[in-house]
Image 1 (cartoon, rainbow over the protein chains, first blue to last red):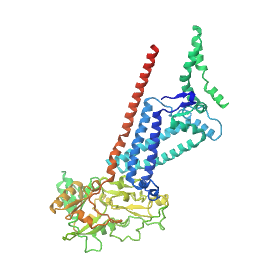
Image 2: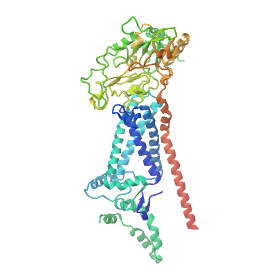
Image 3: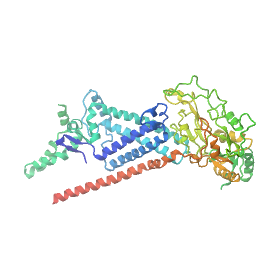
Image 4: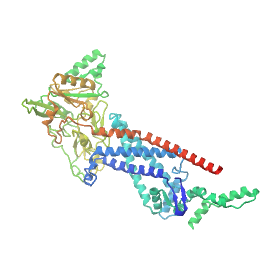
Length: 266
Length: 337
């Protein structure tokens, strides 16, 4: 299901089912990887985690490894699917754009009551920057994890330099992944972002919220929804004026970005 | 078989082989016949020859190993930081002389096995140390890769990288590595919360091998009960000796295969009956599975995951495009209709 305004329900479809599956496959497998990655450290016994009901296996490194591999299978497959599927479709909404860095600062300041948010697209500028950062962390984890996995099966005696490099990349990016996860949770905790949480569970966000905060995105999808009825309702016009009026109708019926932003601010 | 691969080296045979090799293979220097750092080596422990050095206070192999490694562990920090929350400290620094079990200061010991409960009593002496497994979990899943298997087969812990979490001991079927608290890199980071010392075990005298010397235990054995050589040569000798004595081999299949082969005239089930597994004193069960082998199929699936993801993306993308075209064609059909 494509992005679509459900005016009667005051909702707009932000993510389709496939995108929700991608997100949750990566999120859940990522959490399992984090947890089982921690349990690959000798912490289960030392920190009495084995005494926590249901976590008796936390000191069994081979059991953790089974789970780590199972999660890595989903995580890697989903990450590759995400990159290639959306790349194939030419969808670049999550990739950074010019000016995202300065715009991110404006948005973050506004979250704390300093200044006002600029009109935004489907994704916030800082979301686009974080996406690339997260993608890089995931890429490094996958590459280093691959070397470690290959070593475990086929080549325990591979070059020690390669083993050390991949191990330390994996460990350092594990910490960065954990920090990125915390930052992701912190972003959700901010009140202005709450309406987006509904979106990642149901695929739909409140239309009023979208109009208010993601006006550029709405401007992209609204014409497709609303222009045809306007054209249908037009009265017959003299043929010599048709091109001009048609052009006026198509553009003037839609609020310009600046106008819409002003309306929101009012 | 490559003639070089047939070289097996004991204390005296080392001299014989190298002298012969110089002539036979045109090797200028004896050490050239013993490329001990890049060729896979194995050791053989012949229990029909080991007499436990009963005439000595400390068996020769144990004494030599202790002497070689006496300065390996740096001075221990006093007091040793108490780990939190579990307060386990393992300190052998005041019991360095112990030689009847594995400790951080003792990488080999000799077990005395009284066998033959059925009347034919026999005493067998079994030197015990790291088996240097073919695919050692202690090394492959060390979280800091402080433990690594070298190309010559030696599984070696880098004491400068080890945090002493004892994971290697937990995953070793024989629980070989031993911890010394109060030493190592963990002292410089978060000694109360992370790490607890350094793990120590036999490293097959890898530095001596690199210097074209024999491991201490092999060199010191007065009865040549220990041999080292290329993998193929040692396997051949082990099978030949086991055949001659109508005996048994241990270490070839255990834990997925090891670089240490025991040959014995008495079955290892019998020998194992004389052993009680205790800390620092491993047993010799015949059925020792490499637990990580069970994870290999899943690990192979992980290696295939990117391809699976890309194929799925291609199928989904193609389906998407096909659906869109169909929808478009349907609409156009309606419009024209």
